[in-house]
Image (cartoon, rainbow, N blue to C red; front, side):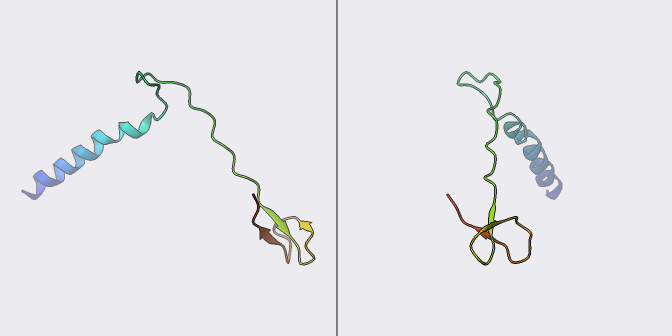
Length: 66
């Protein structure tokens, strides 16, 4: 009984994986070129005086921006 459940779970896991393999399809189901991913905005840091500084320098803290 337990082997049947384990086998069924394994088969279900293997058959559902291809759904995530190709997210870029058009309305008719044909493969299309995926749009480029958006780049993450660069993190900016400021020093203790409030001036922009290179992140990683002593005293520099990340700034929340737009």
